Image (cartoon, rainbow, N blue to C red):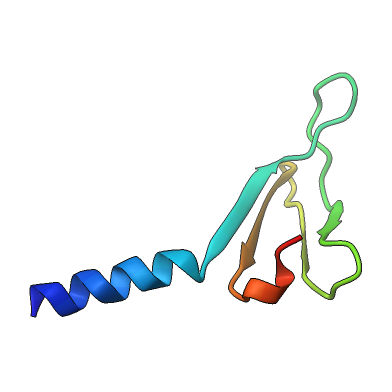
Length: 64
């Protein structure tokens, strides 16, 4: 049972990526509600009121 669980976790780690960060202006102030996307795709997200964002990529085709 443990070997099967380990195998599933190992495989799933290769099919899921996460990009996260904070959008800031030149003075280091966070920028809220900025659109972040992967060019030429429909994959994207928006930064929150603190400028933080998280973009989850689950398909191999979406990687640049």
